[in-house]
Image 1: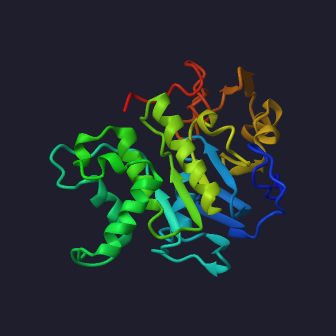
Image 2: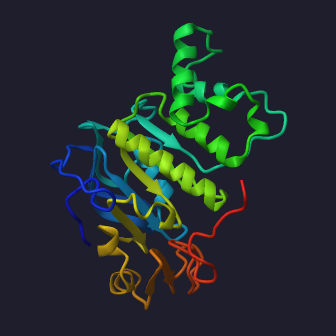
Image 3: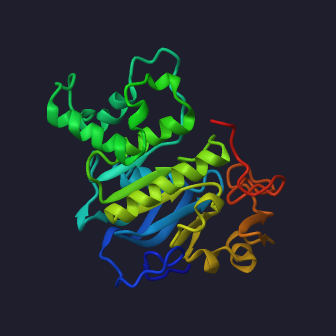
Length: 299
């Protein structure tokens, strides 16, 4: 299993900064359910300002890793800490962006209400209106480019617009670490680019560590510093150029895997599906039957 020293900005714009202190650290981390091991011996340090993509087949433990960091799932063994302290549930300094899910028609929330839940959603009862709260919500709407529809019902907004709001909501607690659980899923290519660039801008402006779970690395390829690739209870960590190689993934899966690079995009062919065990790509980087990055319906 390979590791590398965090070097924020190595895959995008060149950075002259020395390596930052880690905001998240896992040492010898393992997660098992019964006799099934999702991953073990995982050593990972995510630095402030670093963008780490988490890739793997269905069932490889990507979302479970986020649950561990959110304090919703205990490690089987090993340790994990955030800003030098043990992980705990409900830490406001860890932001979370879920998969895009359209609000039901008639949902009685405005755009600003959804963002405002990031400020007061952890408290019991209805939030009391205040000038300070409204000013903070206005700032968050502006930060994610959603001011013009701040008073619109969320059910009237597109998937991409709603996902902008969830990015704003995730920033409400002034986080040091941002967890992104397939936030581009079901978005069209335009909004995939818009939302991923928005997350990247915020991590640079706020010096956020980012852990970004995705099945397709292409929309974020130019932003990623390192990749954590999970497969069959094993993993690899390194730069995209180090990890996303035919020989590396073939060794990781124990079967032939081809990595094809074309026009600045990556297609992986032949990865066994970790959830179903049959030999095809499940879209970890881009499904071999379709153009790279073509996932998702229009938002």
